Amino acid sequence: MQTLERRRFPSWLKRELPTQSTLKTHDILEKHKLSTICESAKCPNRSECYSKNTATFLILGEVCTRSCSFCSVKPGKPGELELDEPERVAKAAVELGLKHIVVTSVNRDDLESGGAEIFVETIRELRERIPECTIEVLTPDFCGNWDSVRAITDAAPDVYNHNMETAKELYSKVRPRGIYTRSLELLDLIKKRNPDVITKSGFMLGCGETKQQIDVLLEDLRKVDCDIVTVGQYLQPIDSKMKVEEFVHPSVFEDIEKQAKQMGFKEAYCAPFVRSSYHAGEVMETVRK
Image (cartoon, rainbow, N blue to C red; front, side, top):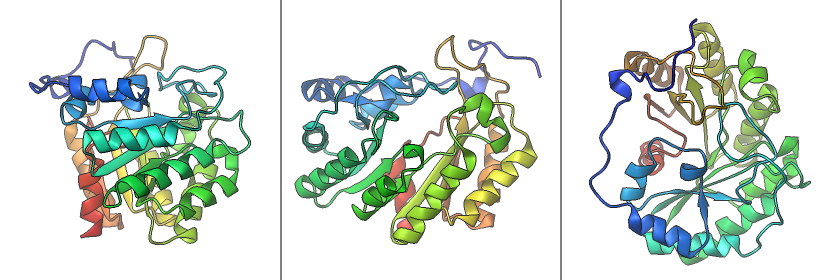
């Protein structure tokens, strides 16, 4: 398949910028010296979300120990953990008026725990300061350190998300330091450890996957009783990252969403601009009803 240029977006990938200001969100995040995956990963929805005083917090620093071919988060050697980061996240969440809070992180393969203790403390701070909120975490695989996953699960987030990202056959291209079966094992562990925690995972289209590979990925997620699946279009964030193989038509996303719901997922959210935390609160609520 011929590689497509980044600038040649089809009509369904063109959107208007929000009219509401994003400055309040920027100012609060800057005040508390916090990062977001919205900025670091150059999410196409960041202006829309910021205009609604919503953001996905990025903890454990801004530097990732991995360099996945689809992600623009800065790779390298991270600094020391900031032990007051959980408190700063909670204070910002209060000021933003968040009711559903999503927290993700860079990979910290330099740490035995992967930084799991900061996730746990962030959940604790949020519960203490905003007891009525719902909390969603999106974590790395912690290099298979299941004690870290157990600790976060035991902290009882409402939603535990870990993304598969792509089909098994494309891991060496898209996610070279990830292991497909390890990610599935992580999701399985969460659900077995605490069945009340909603499990969630997502993947991208447009990386060269086939329909058969998508079918297998969905089947594997159902085998570990994953509750929610999100599917979006991969968009090349910067020139040095993996090229887009295909701009997938919205009708394909609609078909996958229908298929996923028929397979038993409690919710499926599939469209070109969908990302893991996009409309995350609304998606979670559909599962709880």
